[in-house]
Image (tube, rainbow, N blue to C red; front, side, top):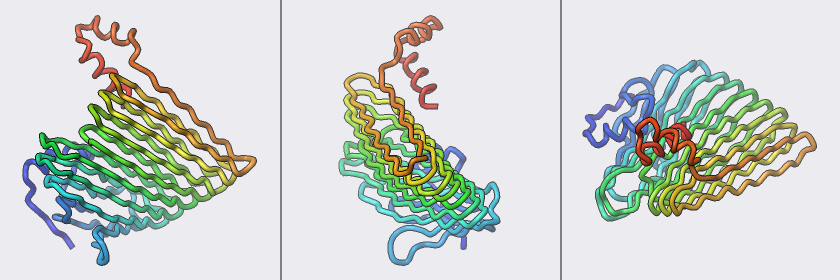
Length: 310
């Protein structure tokens, strides 16, 4: 079944920010706008089915999918709270990129909030990449809030790559991630976060390395400005022969506050779990060097931050 819609300029502009691959009403896609699915389509190997018992969709990805994409962005341009439940069922051998994310355009004085609960059931020998971008804009005084919950169950010999970015403008976010890895499963996570003014962000990530020879690499990079507050709480539990590396790097500016609270738990003699964390201000020598090229201090800081978050 295919459902198409004419989109207004606000929606199209927000989509350009949150969907870095380019959203089109082609192939497998589902756009949720202000709490409703306004357009949806299937591809040969990817089928999207609306849930009957609660808001959300089931995405069925065939093992025959090779180097395919599915786009499921959310845009909110009206005040209110939207809660959605999306479940992904990925068959053995599938190779797919899933592009999600939420953009808020807020012009009112009341809260605009999206809570997306995503669950991934990944079979054996899969290669899955999940890209999630969060962004908020608008002159409204109401809080712009995003609270994503992501549960990932990675099957044997599968690789799961998670790239999550909070671009800017989100007043408050609480991110919950829970991941289980089976035998020989591999996890790669890159989290990028920017906060400013009085914004707050909490990111909790629990990784259970249950399978033999499972591995995880988690990299968090963040920038805190103004009086914003950030907390990153990664937890890696090794219950078998496994390897995990957690790296947290942050730039702190103004009167911001950034906390990295690692928790590593080895429950097997051959579990190797490493955590590294670094928080600091921008190096003065970097600023001086860039200013010799004619940049002012603000421009130099922007260049350094952009390079750091890339």
